[in-house]
Picture (cartoon, rainbow, N blue to C red):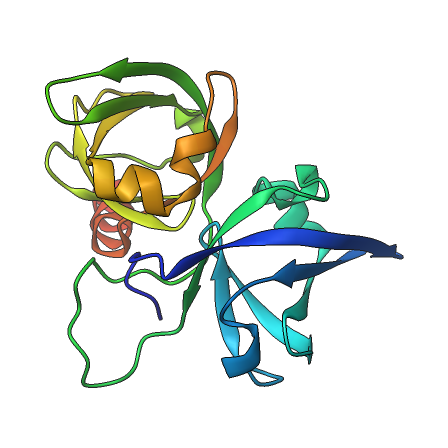
Length: 196
């Protein structure tokens, strides 16, 4: 379980394909604190640490993960938002995030507002996921509040601190991002579908 509060940004140093799996080696200031078998969210995708060195660690993404997320398009040198699993009894500063990406979205707009940057994303609504005005959404592992919720798109306002301390600062129009919709909203949506 995660909170969507990114701890640091890591850099992809090596990508190795093995059958349908992709081994991703990340350089990060968290590396020396990690242990094998720990869960770390990478752009919001929960992956298990399989190897650790002083400055780098490796995780493995399976084919389903690569198909549902933007991890399959990673290149060496790319930046990745990182968050370790939450500690039981700690403050929940973001919202409840499982690290299970529901689908990807495309950035269709970036606009400067008074003191923040508004990012607009479009996604395929046929998968049954929805946003709610002022509800929670996780974009590339970052816990955010939805504004301008529509059937197939939504916006979020990024404050300067979040922009500087996540890979949002490198995000451009047409880029794909990982979405994890609010877990409570997903259950409510599923229940409502059963009654229709």
